[in-house]
Image (cartoon, rainbow, N blue to C red; front, side, top):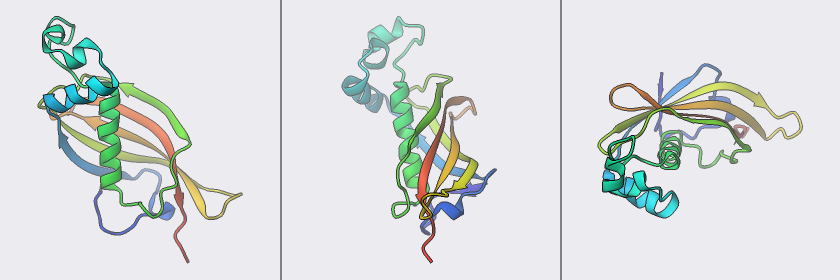
Length: 155
């Protein structure tokens, strides 16, 4: 497994099918769960301790969108591609498999599934990947399947 957060700039050619990139860990606090959800997903089990205690979760849990945002940050921090990233044409799937709770420590892996150089635009290629977030118990909490465009390495 390749470790992310290297200082070298990554380009399309650095991604290979079957490659796994360890993007490190990130701990989650109740304050950030409530702050994110208050702004973007104000459902009671995300923002209100008393309501959450009465929910099926028994406590405040992170919004799935918060989990995705944390994963995105870990991808951006873990794969240095500021010069080569050309954005994403979209995601094929997101699965929220287990709640993320205050005190959890998330680990994220980036799994390269497929790479294809563009035939019509020779300066770029597309990388299909799956991101997998697990908690400190090794339980998978979220997966994201998608694609991204990257510049080809300059001559």
